Image: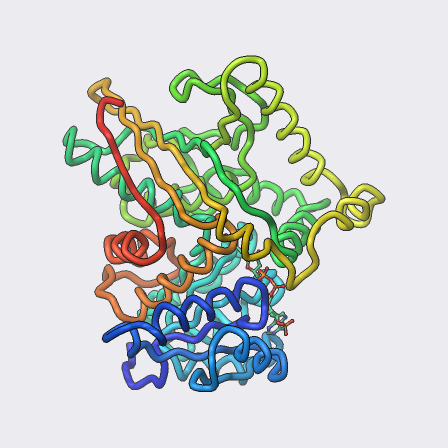
Length: 412
Ligand SMILES: NC(=O)c1ccc[n+]([C@@H]2O[C@H](COP(=O)([O-])OP(=O)(O)OC[C@H]3O[C@@H](n4cnc5c(N)ncnc54)[C@H](OP(=O)(O)O)[C@@H]3O)[C@@H](O)[C@H]2O)c1
């Protein structure tokens, strides 16, 4: 990779809800930090100079350069990516605005990390760019936010612990979201609607969305896992009722892709699934049913229908999202129940200290960008998952700087 670039990283989409949080984090924790941290060379980018200037005046100062690049103008994207070792992008929906940037990054030898949870777009990017990115030594890293870092890095960490304890990787892991507090942004809601619109009346795309192994390499899209949970059931190992997790369809596929890209260190028979815990007894069951019904309503409302229009009125618009207090009081607590070949079990735990979608996600994306620019990362390239692209270096950063904790206890 060329090292004569002006910047370590550029945050593109800095005028949006999540992009401005990334810029604020970089300014507070790095530009205003000590020693090596203060030496980080970064810039804010977007399509609208006035908006960028306004956001810069609120979250940083004039020392941070501004760069103009529009997703519809390939030349501007190449001019931007040529200047930086890494582009962190929060310009979404990625299926609408992200593809040209990926091509520009590959053309200019620039790593790229994003916050997409759009499975259809990720499949498209893998098909179109995995080989060319690999040939250029470029890492294109999707899902560098709440989806799917806690799941992907959680399984990566826990499998290391299980191997150290039992000599073999866990045969199965169940992620159960125990508790979380946060909110949704208009950008995320728009991205979700964009995906629902695409799969409507398109069976092939719908299959990609629901098939468990659809992000695996061609010819390796099979294994023991079934499509994600669609009911409320009692989970004995977690001793709780569980209901469907909205992010499961993304996270589980990312974990399976990591296993495949690494040559199956978790085994070809490895099983992984995700759900949300709603507690014990009748109240836990009722809570699960109420949550599952709400989720079903959001997912099944047809784009353009009366129900979708009604729902749209209750969700935030692009540029909006949870306020500072909601972000700072937010958190998440994920449990990972493991089963092993020798009959033993274990319990892993991943927590985050801000709301999952924005407070924590903005720190995770920033640390991924810095990790790709500065750390010794595994010698792999292509369209990758976070654990494959950054491995132990990212694990270290997330714990040291981004407020995540990773724990594991055998025989729990
Ligand atoms: N994985 C996760 O955990 C996670 C968490 C949070 C967000 N996300 C994803 O991140 C994305 C952003 O979310 P958000 O809430 O920050 O959205 P947002 O507030 O709507 O911000 C979108 C950004 O994209 C920019 N943009 C739009 N069209 C553009 C174009 N043609 N060229 C260049 N820039 C353009 C906007 O610029 P203007 O300001 O000029 O309009 C804005 O800066 C969404 O796809 C969302 O799903 C994922």
